[in-house]
Image (cartoon, rainbow, N blue to C red):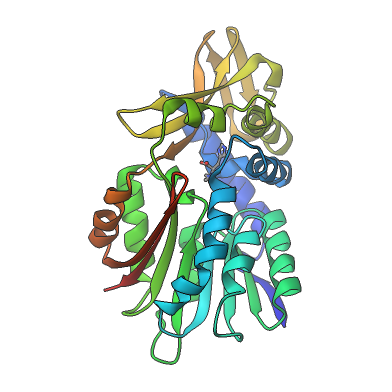
Length: 324
Ligand code: AVJ
């Protein structure tokens, strides 16, 4: 058993500078935006885990159920796997369920996440449940993490990339295509990808999932402003921004926004930002694209993958594809 941390020598400093740069750029765009990856500081990661336990947010529960019933079938369609890379492991529960069914015990698992809190939790959960694994944690973006792993796999043992929870839904369609091509470029023939995607469903269900009656999703969204205030010296009046979820049917995405309740000036000293919001003006903080099951094979095909298995339950799909 082993665990190591790698990548940027001073991740704190480097990631703060990148955060400041992104806030300066996206907050002054029209429409105003903040990238969704910054939702996951320590509190944000905990709030997301709470979201996963809400009765109205079914992605995590359905995926967990699919993984526990289908993990054996998934491994039975793959060659021997020696390396697993999970992009965005969150609490690590999903990977524990998957790896419990792995016919290979001595597997190296790479966890790639921007949240150190999530990485620690996931690595601890994996090693507690499956002590024969070797776990490497990468505090990095998906792209940097993939590059750090240095594939491709080969006859001695193939790579399985795991991208679950409908995390791909945060990419717009061209971004998803580009991202899948990047994953493919890190892999060799016979390596594989397991992809979890939320499917289009009735608007009322989608809105309850992203604007829940307990206000947990609202807290998750508004915590982004708390983080900007704390880490970058911002003076957002958090009460003056309302959470809003919108189903954009034409684009097939749920959008999260923070809507200014009044005309107000906001300064973020550490990012050199000084902006005035009109009443009703919003900051667009996330897109969660929803797929149709039939869109997935062509999307994977465009990136150089071929679907070798697909399982569906309660408006959610797991798709297994191998690198052509
Ligand atoms: C972790 C990106 C898959 O988009 O459903 C949950 C994040 N946002 N509630 C999603 C989220 C609002 C989640 N992903």
